[in-house]
Image (spheres, rainbow, N blue to C red):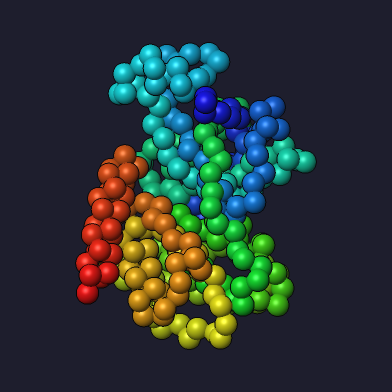
Length: 274
């Protein structure tokens, strides 16, 4: 089956913070973009390789069949912050750290009329309305999904939110009907360990938690281990995923995820044999 590519145009951009750029896109093809139930709904944005001519209409299956791998568009995965079919708008927030990387610099220089192509959406998480309370942990890359999730947590539930950002200038307003307990963590020099220590220091409310832990892969791994081993939270009450890996681009991150999955399987086998 052919993978559907959605082609949109940039409508406007907004600098939300020193390191976050919002891009709002639309166009006729947005009408067919699915409005799924997931709050971690993500797309794979396609960036053309300079100098390569692609078929029109754009067709990823044809590209994979007819072009060498080096000419395939580069893919970067981003969460859809908001989708409004009535207004014809799809919103994506991009982390921007200067000229490094691919998607961040593109977003920082995007102008109305620029093309935005993407595959998807995917997704797997939405906050369980029956959970007694919610825990959401992440960094700038997870902020769009955290913001989307908070909008869906019902009144009368507590949402503990721990977010690591560069500084106070990177803090954003987060709205929710829930009882919000929000803590911003300003990244230390090496950027490691803060989320784990914050979760360790949190006094968990009574009742069943539904937890969302997404962000830098090593940080996420450590928090997951704490939640499952020290807090005794069942896997089906967790949504855990690394969005990126320090020191690697997305291609390198895919390799890391494969390596980590193999290491986790081996670790589970050892634990089961004890």
